[in-house]
Every structure is written in C-alpha cells, then in structure tokens.
Length: 369
Image (cartoon, rainbow, N blue to C red; front, side, top):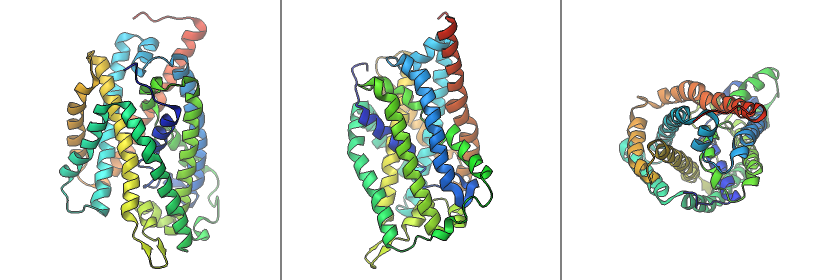
C-alpha cells in the first residue's frame, strides 16, 4: 500500500465530488429560507478554516502516516484500535445512508419499478469492483468523470438562464429576518455535512505524491464546492421558490425539470441523475476504501480486499432496513447521523486529537504504546 501514489489534482477531484454528494440535489441550510445561499457561502468559508486546522495539526505533522498510524502515535495502540473500529462503524453508517439516497433518487426519477434490493446490489457492485482494483484506479477514473460533472452543472446553469425561469424576487428581500438565522444555518454545515465531512480523507492523503500541497489542495476543493453549492442553491431558490425548495426532497431535480429552451431542450432529468450518481459512486468508493483499510489495520491482514465483500453486505442490507420510508430516512439522516455521528467524528474527536498533538509537541509528553 505504501507504493500507491495519487496526484494532487486527483485528491482535489475526489474531495470535490465527495462533498457534492448528496448536497447538490437536496436543500441544505433550510432554516435560512430564501437566504440559504448566504448560509451555504458562509458555511463554506468557515469550513475552510476548520479543514485547514485539521490538516495542519493532524496530517501535516504526520504526513507519512496513515490515519490509523496517526491515531496510534497520538493516543496509543489500544485506544487507537478502538477509535479505528468506531470510525469504521461511522463510515459504514454514512455509506448505507448514501446508498439509500441514491436508490431513492433512482426509484423516483428513472427506475420506479425496479426492486430496491436489485438497485442496491447493482450500484454497490461497481463500488466493490473499483475498491478492489485500488485507490489509483479510483483516482484516475475520477479525473475523467470530473470534467463531465463540471460540464453538466455549467450546462444546467446556462439552460436555466435561457429558459427564462429565474425570478430574482424569490431571493428578496435579503436578510429579512436578520443575520442570526443565516449564521445558525451555516454552523451545522461546518460541523458536519457537507463542509465538515472530510475526515475520511486522512485515510488516503498519505498517498499523495506532493504532500506539501495537500493543505492548499484541500482548501481549493472546499472553495470550489462552496461556489458550486451556492450557485445551485441560488438557482433552486430563483426557479422553484423558497417554499417548494424547503418542502421538496430533491429541489435541484425540480429546478432542472423547468428547463425548456425553444420547446426542444427539455426533461434533462436523466443527465442530472447521472451527475448525482457519479459523485455518489466516488463518495461510496472512498468510504468503502477507508472501511476496508481500517479493518485491515485492526485485524492485521495482508490485503484490505479481504474486508470489501463482508462490509459491503452489511451496507447493502443496512440501507434497506435503516428506515421504512424516505421521510423517515431523511429524518434519521439529519437527526441521527448529522447531529450525533458527524459532529462527534468530524469535529469533537479531531479537536481532541489536535489538543493532544499540541500537548505532545509543546510539553513533550509521551504515551507508552
């Protein structure tokens, strides 16, 4: 695994698509209503500060070590194993929630008569194959699909403009209820999904060929994602309106359905679904790679591929039974995963690791392993 190398551009691409899924099709920062685009923008800027701190204090001082090795260096062998197991469980939960998201979108807009189990197996088969081939294969493939994803979002923006469906009054008046609701809506975006959701990349950043540029690349990826999500939020608000955006499961899809250029370019749902699925697949691949390599560290096996199938079975089955319907799924994703899991594993534990790293650095306190 130490021989694996990925470029800084590949890291940028993986981070960019990871953060876009599923944030690009759902409505984030709902509490800010028609000022949601401001909350999205502010959340991204604050997220850059958080990611900068995490990478500077956790990764930069240990850039030749994997995430499990960093944990062992900071907290010792036994506590680090517990943390690796907990993070693996966390990544499994994120994967099964995301898999459910993708299947619900496919069922709603494309394959409405296909059994969910079939969708889940087919979708995750692609993930299993890619992860089995390795991180370099995933990264090279992501480079190709990145340009297609970016082109599709630019295309949607241009076509919405020429469809004459953008209404400026839908985002006016700005700050009608003051700045506090905007700030309150931006904070969760930093603490968890989507801007504070990059701890998984500590599992692959030690493979980057130019380690001194990891911080800059991470910040650039987050800035790019912030601009794209802000643009998407503005488009959704201007086309669909604040009320429908807030009460529609997939406002971006509803917005794209309004594209109509010369009674010729219409019904681009399938392209939008493909763009979303592309980002989701790569997010699932990164999570599955982190799960498999984490379990490899815990059980000390020669190959991480040993754990791909068992963990994939758990994710597929779990995604089917995590909720009875999509409404319950959304509630659990926000209240359970977003509130408890993500804040704990993306903010609280990294903050504690930073404190430990500072204590060990400045006071020279060692932990016996």
